[in-house]
Image (cartoon, rainbow, N blue to C red; front, top):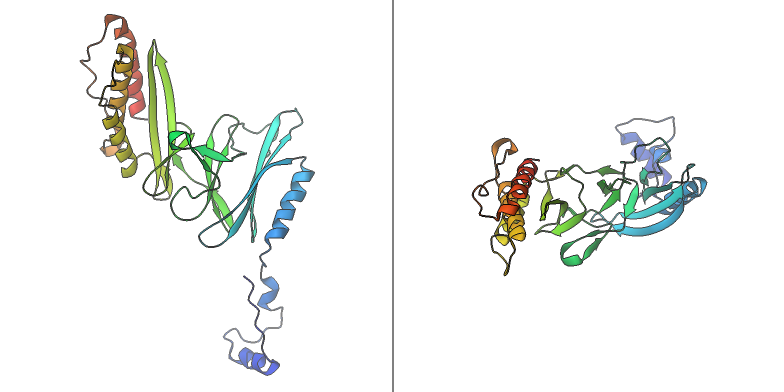
Length: 292
């Protein structure tokens, strides 16, 4: 906010006499004040996108707890090879605080440049973005790469930064917790009829999304309990998958020095002979996943 002081010439001269900075012969500090102007910065985004040959595919506005307003824009275009390109721009009153994309012909395709309008959440619902994903009252957005890598960007009035995500596989969804959200990654594995779904979460703790947090371990404990009950008419392959998933969540719920975890409780499981080879292979895979 620009603050203007209006006073009489006599009062201003008196102020200069008592100023600790002494007399100034150069321009006043007011000449260096950056004036907030959201509309001007949005216009600069529009001008740049036209020059780049990009067209607008999504836009939204979000206000943080500080009252700052952010204008978020997602763009698409084509590079010289005819491939689809994407870009994201975010403006605040103080400038363009985020500018990513479009990728050049030689750029790595793993760089996230596509704006995600929403992320899947619990029970088939979705969370519209931008949204406060950390519980601190300030907005975040999500970007995705051509390879599926997801980045979470925290917005601030004078800039934006990528948040660290401690997950071995890219997050694809959210899970609602007591404060904010957890990022969810899912790895699906099938071994000769045994279909596994290994899920893990990272919660926002100490400035990053981490799977080593107490809240993440508590989530795994609940998932372990949920798989402790066998559904009616459970087949042998489904039972094998449930027990391996239960052991996976039990191991991820542990708090161990150095993060080393061991798969337990799946050594003496009775299964039909035709599933034994697949079971052993699936168990080895889950054991490796436990420590990732």
